[in-house]
Image (cartoon, rainbow, N blue to C red; front, side, top):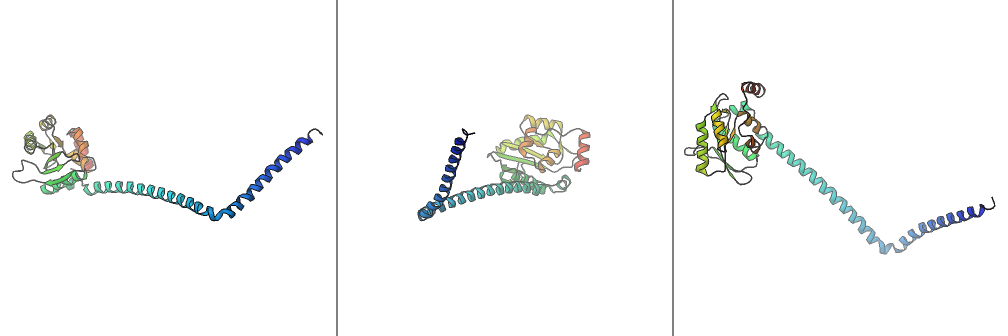
Length: 234
């Protein structure tokens, strides 16, 4: 027991020394701050101000990005909703109203210089526009009864109009369908055929670029058309 007492005494001394140093530091630091406050306070306030400004700038930038993203989403949804029509509503349009509706869909998809040109001597072109990449697009619009079919000669006229206008892209949009030969002619000659089913899809938010990738496919058989009519109207 006598041999352990010096160890306890030494440990107590070290503990007391550390406590004394801590107390001295705790007293010395405030004393130094008080003594040199007139010199230090501009730096302290500057550091606080810089930290506050940085935090505020970060918060404002983050808030701005969130608001901009929400605004873009709202505008995109609004553009789609503004142009959305049911197929029966489109069927009730006049020929000129249908052309205007197609022009609106082109603007919604980012086309520029969109204009109706349907008149005598237009070579069958109803709407012209510039695609977002600058290419010239021509469109022929036919608002027919759903039971009608676009004949191959109509697609030949569109090909002739593309050649005459030197357009890069030619699109045939109809509320009806296409005959087998007319679809084959369109696919062989790079014409985009937008039949009734695809018109409904385009009208509901799909892009013309996406429709061009499948180009007229998917009119379906009689069973498919009956289901479409039951779901979306005539």
